[in-house]
Amino acid sequence: MADPMRIRAQAQGDKTTVRVLMSHEMETGQRKDSAGKPVPAWFIQEVSASHNGKPVMTAQWGPSVAKNPFLQFTIKGAKAGDKVSISWKDNKGDSRSDEATVS
Image (cartoon, rainbow, N blue to C red; front, side, top):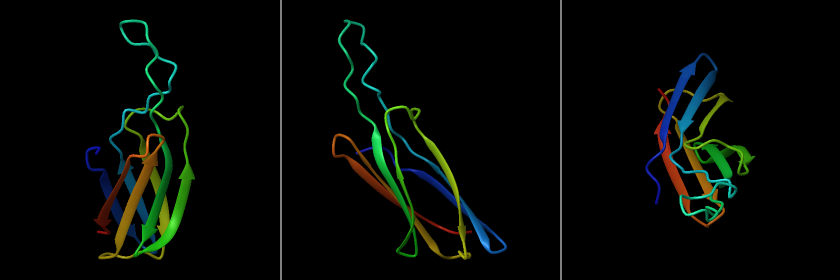
C-alpha cells in the first residue's frame, strides 16, 4: 500500500480549504525503462472525499496526472473538529483512505 496522504483541512468562516498530497508513482504507460521495455500504466483513477461521512467530491483521473498528485478543494459548512476523509483507487486495484480533522 502507498504511503499515507498528507491532508490539511483549515476552516475560515463558513468555508474549509482541504489540501491533499498523495503518494503515487502515476505511470502513463508510455515511458520505457533502461532496457527499452515499456513501463506499464499505473495511475489513480478515482478520488473521492467526504465530510463527516457525507460525500462532497468525486474525481475521475487518467494517466496524465503528475507523480505524487496534489489536490485542493473547498467545502462549505465544515467547522473545526469535523472529519474529512479522502480515498483513491488506481487502475491496478490498489486503494488508500486517510482522514483529517478540520482545524
